[in-house]
Image (tube, rainbow, N blue to C red):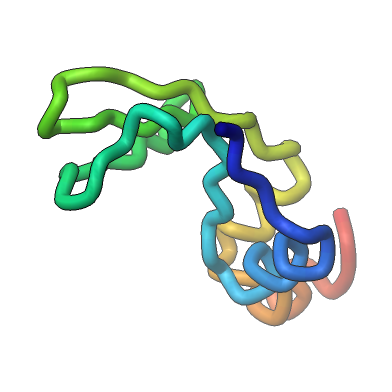
Length: 82
């Protein structure tokens, strides 16, 4: 089963500096330890089962907002969208 977010929740998460991770959750069991890797590709590593779950990539403009710590810090740093 693929888990996603409502558009409003997704954008609010980005604006507040939270990373919305969208991936297939069907192999995750209660108690599994998950590690989110934000490197080149967004992935979720299930450390308990030693598996990797690909996640949907975030658009570059959203990554810039997240890197700044959210929308307000982004606007402070850039005086608008760049």
